[in-house]
Amino acid sequence: GAGVSQSPSNKVTEKGKDVELRCDPISGHTALYWYRQSLGQGLEFLIYFQGNSAPDKSGLPSDRFSAERTGGSVSTLTIQRTQQEDSAVYLCASSQLAGFTDTQYFGPGTRLTVL
Amino acid sequence: KQEVTQIPAALSVPEGENLVLNCSFTDSAIYNLQWFRQDPGKGLTSLLLIQSSQREQTSGRLNASLDKSSGRSTLYIAASQPGDSATYLCAVRPPQKLVFGTGTRLLVSP
Image 1: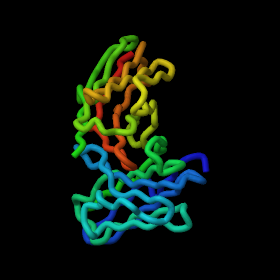
Image 2: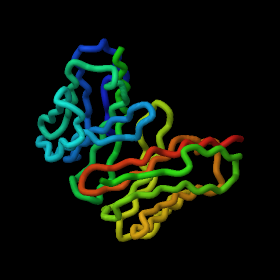
Image 3: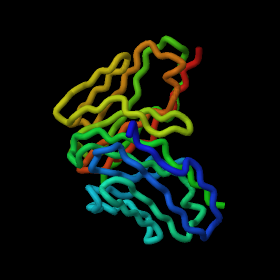
């Protein structure tokens, strides 16, 4: 595709509900990354995929957060039993390779609001 | 743990001024440094990427420098325009993930 796409663009949910956020990376990109940008906080890394496997999950804040990637393409970030502190913009990025020098291209993000 | 700091947090300038944004990082063991801009409600747009072996990169009115040994990078914007108004983020890359600074919010007034 032309760029990284994410859906939905906005999600409002009630505390305690589960949500799924979707990321479509640029076609052919093998590496996929999830980041979170909370109000007043910087961008923080959540998880990274190389193909369908996740070598680095170190940024997931709790076991309520999980992510998967299928077919080396689309990824879904799932947040179970959402809490108000989960409210943030969730950004996805992809890069052609998982090398250390590749540029990461970002999607527009999903703004999650937990009431 | 790598920490990235950006100064100033906010900057307001009149159109036409040249300006410098600063980024510092605590661990010099990086592979590259990337500058992004973020417009309200939008994702990140990559502006410049400097590999650890490089000293600077230029793109149009933008010039970014990297001094890995001192843990510093600067983004120079020449002849600023109102369209440059955005939040500018620097990010360093240890293996794989990016570690971001907190950003500089730039406002260029006509």
